[in-house]
Amino acid sequence: MSDFILHHYDPSPFSEKVRVMFGLKGLAWRSVQTPNMMPKPDLTPLTGGYRKAPVMQIGADIYCDSQVILAEIEARAPTPATVSGPAWGANIWADRLFFGATVPVIFGEMGHLTPKDFIADREKLSGRPFDVDGMAKAAPIMKVQWRSMAAWIDQGLAGQPFLAGDAPGLSDVSAYMNIWWLGGALPKTYTELTAGLERLGGWRERMRALGHGTRTEMTGPEALAVAKGAEPATAPAHDPADPLTVGQAVVVMADDYGKDPITGTVVAARPDRLIISRDTPDLGRLNLHFPRVGFIAVPQA
Image (cartoon, rainbow, N blue to C red; front, side):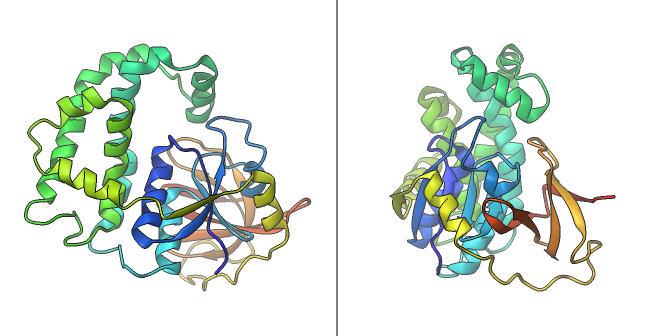
């Protein structure tokens, strides 16, 4: 098996999901630290412009967004199994609703400490103002939302150590992201918002104990060299019922924020993912993998 290479930065909550999945699976992986804002000269040549963390690389196959990264890890390392029941629904809930509450809680309290260049970068990423004052005003409301969602986790742990049952699964990894982020960024606020949620603390410690697997650092140029020296793996079969067709030129982008357009040619389109090919002058042919939920693909004229 080719090495898992994760392009991430340590405080990234979405990257923490992937790191915990590596720990749950007991996997070895290579770590490439990418900046938390643009420019990202060792990342965007791989992704065709996609800039959000994390991105996973396996040779010349590039996986954009934590959803498709987690799915690929599960496919390549199926033991122990982590996907059961509504786990993918829990994942998108954590990414959208729960994360959407965590952001104003954190930045509403510490936004005044945020560097101006980071604010400018996030405004460009989202296409709207990074309104620290607005988040501070919204924080009391969003704290109620955050506590209510944390209470769902607590309720889901009744009679079992993990949301997935006796062993941790994708639903645990997904839900843990926002617990980890707020607990690390604002410990006092976290303690206040989880008061009385008696099962949550033990679960948090069990998730922390999973670790991150075996991590080895590598540089961005080293990762680019890996891509240049590899060919994309054979893609899964195309879904003939999909509206996209193999060989079709498309533009792919996220449907929430970070809508950087990525152009390529369809290799395979399936209900769970879209794979497009890009021929690059410096790295050769790369296959880029995107989830279908949360991304759109528009045919090029």
